[in-house]
Length: 389
Image 1 (tube, rainbow, N blue to C red):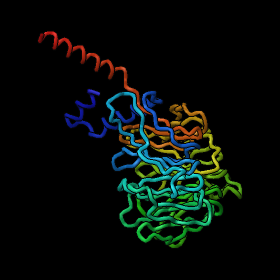
Image 2 (image 1 turned 180 degrees about the vertical axis):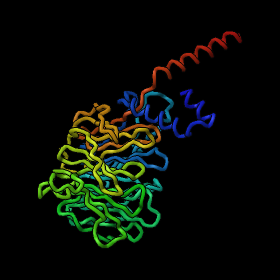
Image 3 (image 1 turned 90 degrees about the vertical axis):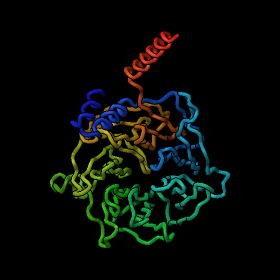
C-alpha cells in the first residue's frame, strides 16, 4: 500500500493503479456479512435486482410473487450491525401490482425518479418512484422475459424487450409506443443487453441457441450471429452452425468497457466473446451449472485488475477471473437456487437473490493489518492522552 502511494506521489505510477489494486483485493476478500441484513419482503423467489448508478444507494428487486421492493443500502445508524430497510413496496395490495412473476427490474440510468419492470403478465411498466404509479404501460402478446434500457444513450430512449415472441420489440420512452421490431430469432428471447460502449449496439439471446448483435439504426437485420466454432464447419454439426451454445442461451452481460460480451447457456457453459468481431475467445470456465428456464442475471466487476465474473451456480455464486477462466471462489449462503446477482462498483460488494426469498450481501472483509493498524493507533492515542494527564 505504501509503495503504491509513494510511486503515485512521485509521479512514477498511474493514479488509477492503486485504486485497481485495492478494488481487486476487496473483491478477493468477499464474504457473507453477518452484520448486514436485507429486509425480507418477498413471499416467493427473487428473480431480479438492480442498483441505481446515480448515488449507488437504492436497490430494486422483483419477485415471482409479482412484488417490487426498493431498498435503502445506506447505513445511517453508525453501528456495525444494520439492516438495509425496504423504503417502499409495490405489494399485492396495490392496484398497480404485476399479476404474475416480475422478470426484470431496472432503474432509469440518469435519475432515481423512474424505474421499469416487466412481467409474465405480458406487460412492461414505467414507474414514477415518488407515487409508485405506472406513468406508462406497454402491453405485449406473450410473457415478457426481459427488457433493457441503454446505460449511455443520449440520442435515443429505446427499451429493448424480449418476449415469448421471437421478434425483439423496441419501445420508445418519449412517445410511449412500440416503434420497431428486430427479426431473426426462431424462439423466445430470454435476454437483451445494450452495449455500454456504443449506444446503438444491442445483443440478444434466445432459446434457439443463438446470440445476435444488432445496430438498431440498420433495417437490414443483425450485424452478426455469434458462432461458438468461429466459422470452423468441420467442428460444427449442421444444427450447431452459427450457434453460441448447445442449448437455450439465457444470460448476457457486457464487460464494463463494452469490449467483451459474456453469455451463459443451459449446456452448462459460459463463453466470452469479442463484441466488435463476434469471435469466441475460447476461455474455458469449466462447467457452469445452469438449469434456469428463464433469464439468468449475472454480473461483471468494474475497476479491478483482473476483472471478475459473478454467476449464479445452483445455490452458490461462482466467481471467475474474466480472461483466464479460473474459478476463484464459490460464495455459499443461499438455501436454494440463486437467480440473480449484482455488483456494486462503489464499494466492491455483491448482492444476490434466490428462490429462498433472501437477498444476501457479500462484503469485503477487513484485512488483519487494517485491524492491527487501528488498534495500534488507539494504543498510541491512549498513551498520548495518559502523558497529557
